[in-house]
Image (cartoon, rainbow, N blue to C red; front, side, top):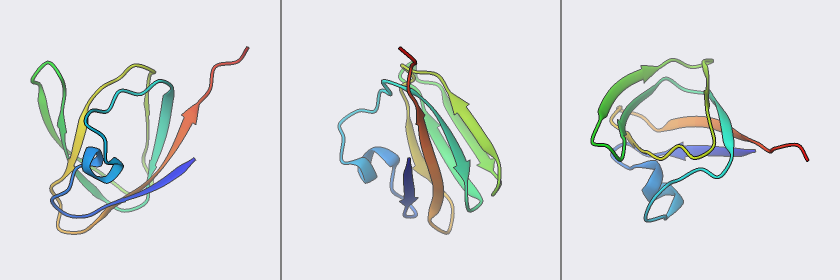
Length: 86
């Protein structure tokens, strides 16, 4: 479990200090503050979304994207990775 706080204008990639972000495990995030997210996918698709505090979102293993905070305040969310059984 990881708690993230991403300042205005920064990306999750910058917060993680990684060149790219590909998730080896699926994960669930629970949003703590309203988050204005600019999502960039490797295929060039760009989405701008507002995710409200209290909302949970799930992604499968292997997903790759960059998330930029375009809101006025820090984005705060908790991420829980889902480990495969076995």
